[in-house]
Amino acid sequence: MTGSLVLRARARQGWGRVRRAAVPVLLASIAAGAAYAAARYGLGHQYPFFAPVAAWIALGFSADRNLRRVAEMAIGVAVGVLAGDLLVHQIGTGPVQVAVVLAAAVLVARFLDRGDLLAVQAGVQAMIVVVLPASGTSGPLERWLDALVGGVMALVVAALSPQDPRRRVRAVAEEAMSEIAEVLRTLAGGLRTQDPAAVRRALLRGRASQPVLDTWRSAAVSARQTARLSPAFRRHRDELAAQVASAALADRAMRNARVLARRAETVVARPPADATGARAAADALAPLADAVDLACRGADELGLALSTGSATATARRTLAEAAARTDPWRLVPGGDLHAQGLVLLLRSLVVDLAETAGADPEAARATLPEI
Image 1 (cartoon, rainbow, N blue to C red):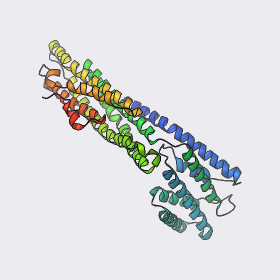
Image 2: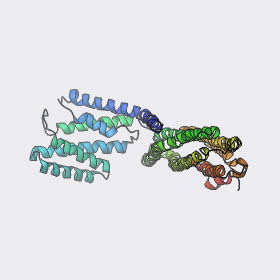
Image 3: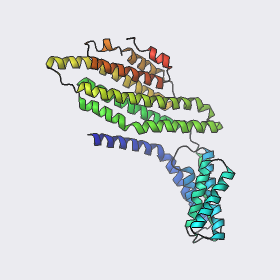
Image 4: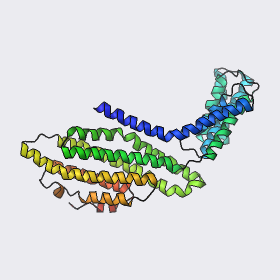
């Protein structure tokens, strides 16, 4: 069961990555093909290897395609190829030449710009030029011209297809909140039916979902940096800053959800003393399952709001309603300390979700009943 759940989680996350990368990959592939055609048929180069390579490296499969980043990558490739070509025609190839050309290309790149990407690509492309034979080329600048064509093609594609930095962040945010909601939905079902296997599935799904939460945080940080640098997207800085904060808080909420599921598995798996004890356990856990279901609904509503950049007021109201139910003495009146301990864990989880929705920490805690 564990292996199957992990495989399904990885497949689900993999398809999510494919959906997000489909358009960027298609555009980069078209740019690479166009760069090859321009160098092969426009310039008459027989083997324009560096034209599609430069276009692909500059664009890649990421949706983070601000012009500065694309330009850094394109210039880095061009600088590396130029330095390599010029030096190889003078000093030949060999281990010493590789070291000399690498150092020269990287130092030139550092002189031109502070970007690390530029320097790294300059060094890589310079080494490729030194190692690969220059067969089929007619001069020391042919491969550099190919790289230049690829870089220009990448810049054209990036300029004509500007990517709103919020788009990927919103998509990942919705996916991450959906994972939290599914964990809570599965957990609620396990509590209601007293099924340890269902509670265990909730725990395993929570563990397998961590990469999505990590992706949300990294995507939000990257998008916020893009918005700071790009005048066109500066107006989105507040939303992206909120996404960074929400990603961190959602990660905390998921960790609490896993703790809740782990403790719930122990509670549900307790053997009842008799039929009366089994009924009492069911009566104690049913209201808790309802509260978890309500938190699940709040997570779903929050994911929808984050995916569209809309207000999270509906989610906050639902989560406040869930928080209002988390009085352990009223929710589990039979004096079952283990079940009441689950209610205390749920309180922390609901507060984390409310803060993820943008609630002030004090206001989020104020929705909890006093105990």
